[in-house]
Length: 361
Image 1 (cartoon, one colour):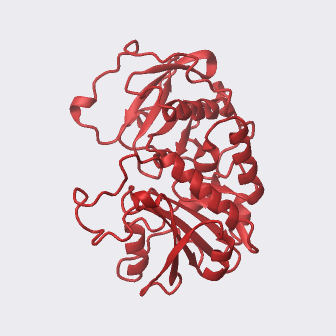
Image 2 (cartoon, one colour):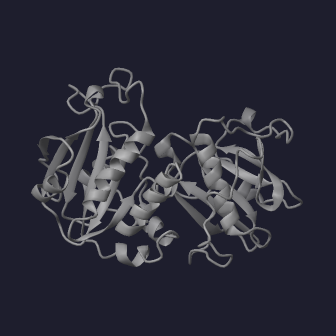
Image 3 (cartoon, helix red, strand yellow):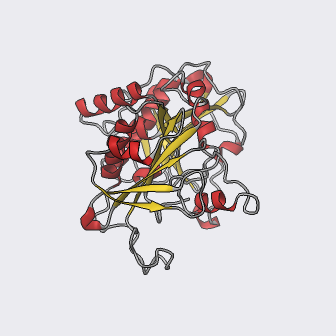
């Protein structure tokens, strides 16, 4: 579900249900402007409404649910309420079914994340919207402004992180879960990550987006980012021969490339090159669809050495025929200093660390 009625969404998992009154007390530093009653959701009957950029009709919606996070859309006949909620982005825009399972399997930044997240029995969803109070939010998009003119996703995520930090101090809070970025963090991990970013004057990308590692074949690996869409950026992929590169170097390269795009230095397009891991050039390949769930457009980085990725790792998705021309390796080249992969190197990636299930094309 792309951004629309809702522009950002995160979640806090709890060991037991929490009341709207307890949430309101915890979020007392935020301005509560009302409460919405749901007529068709017994698990989440109330939503607290808070101001967020009131001059832009922005609101923070906080919904406590007395059920575990629903990691699938349900059936339109057997569970129509859940199916419609997923379809409208009420479980976070950019979230895709199976996001909690994937976040748990790829919880590189929090070793205990997979096991501890299973302890939750309830959750609280936090959403940002600019259409609350609009006469008919289901009007065609060209008639209802879904985003303000000076829309700033970075500001939204910082605001949501403040609210999440407060909720994590509540009794029974298990962890922070970002469905669109497929990230899990406990209270301490989120606090340390935010403080590190603040002290280095960097956006806390690793608190909002995940980097995942897959074994594609016996020889080739895939690493990708998930969640860049929250920042209106494409996600990134890198395919590489497993024995020739350190996963931590690939992770640092993808994080630095994401930061490069976020800082607005330039767009990354088909055929652009940048010096990356192995002190060689890597070439960018625009793809309509990723090699792994969730479905999304990506920039895929290919090492320019003597190795040739298998055909299945070079699939772009359903691009028009006119866009399938050969790349010109020398057409564009990014400044080597612009994408510096040391800043975000994560030493928790080891050569032999892969999810239990092999990557499935």
